[in-house]
Length: 114
Image 1 (cartoon, rainbow, N blue to C red):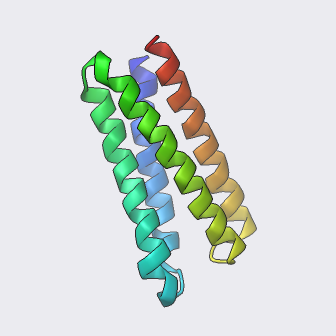
Image 2 (cartoon, rainbow, N blue to C red; image 1 turned 30 degrees about the horizontal axis):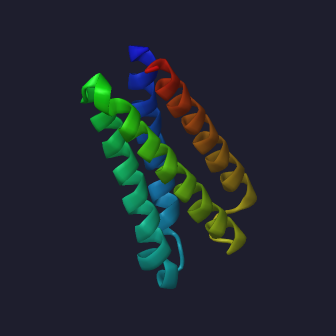
Image 3 (cartoon, helix red, strand yellow; image 1 turned 90 degrees about the horizontal axis):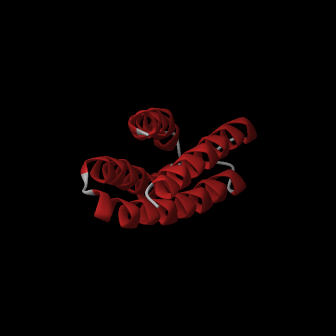
């Protein structure tokens, strides 16, 4: 399971590297509202993955459940960006697919703790 845990942290890091340059291209009116909100959320999620990795087993499940909530919030923010045409269809599909896979892996990590 350690490989999955390490992989999910690296995968989310790669996701951040992909997403932040896209956010930088948002219109000025939304870059500092919606863009900052998304940026902060992805940084929080990455920090929480690291926290879960290094936490005692008894604390991991609670942290991972909070990550799942934040991932769902992020999905809606990304959807809003797509609907407002800040993200094109190809990028939206790619980002949505990544978030889906990250959610599945987070769920698998939670299930491994039972």
